[in-house]
Length: 367
Image 1: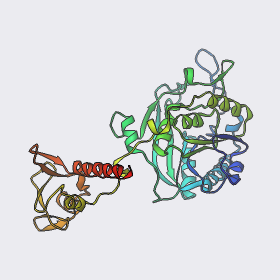
Image 2 (image 1 turned 180 degrees about the vertical axis):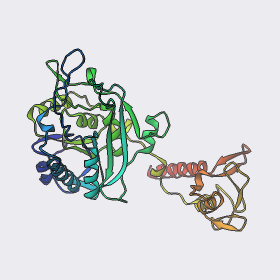
Image 3 (image 1 turned 120 degrees about the horizontal axis):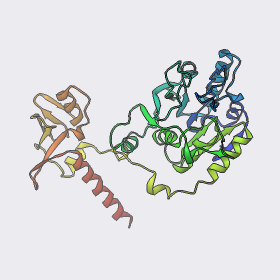
Image 4 (image 1 turned 60 degrees about the vertical axis):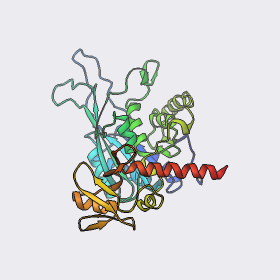
């Protein structure tokens, strides 16, 4: 297959289908594989009604060795189709996630985080012989250690009321209107909540990226990817699940235009500005004093764009690092005295003014 089948569900065994796709062509993979739950008996509630547990044939393996061979095959196939900058998320429970994690590392993936999905409405342990299983674990791994990968830190922080998002996610199970049903019966026994996939996809991909799910099921990954303007590819062997997913995704209306609501810029996306450019263009002057943070440390600007604090001479970043004995982004730690207002303003405000002026000049030149 020379071209990616974007926004389509491919029917077949996941490893076989993955091996038919172009190498290094996918940005992000989310995998919700069989957990190999090893259920021995039916589960009954105290009122003698049967629990609708996961007893599907696709979740059953003859032995741990069989499960490990299966896991190694599909994870290896995923690694082949991932771009070198790509990443993979895989979810599981205590039944399988430790085996999956070991195989991930054996295959060369580099684990970035483990996320605990805390279920706010977990199923009780009806027999009362163990703690209630109230969480599942997600492993987030990059294909290649040290490669540049996507993490939309500021988007996730904004999603979390401007606080850094932690690795414990409190999200309820998929219930109510979100649960896909056929004639009143759950269409898929392990349908994941869209809120969970929303965080995965928003954090680890960008609009236009390709998100692949090798165990597509009821199509949650595709549904959320479509809503977030990502391309998606699903792999599913069960024709009934495939039909459910197709109908579900087709029913999602087209969202607002891409450029309006889905692209988030950060300070890292801005054009690089040399500190000396502010000096050359009159935003600062030779001999001007800069003030470090809220302390009493100061530095004087030299003609070559370096700054001097006592006997320490270097860039705003180097001198700041020497003062606080820690990594320093000088733009966010040094202040200058704004003469019109008489206030000390963070140096980054001058960089913003410089970039805004440069953009105005560019716009005028294009007229």
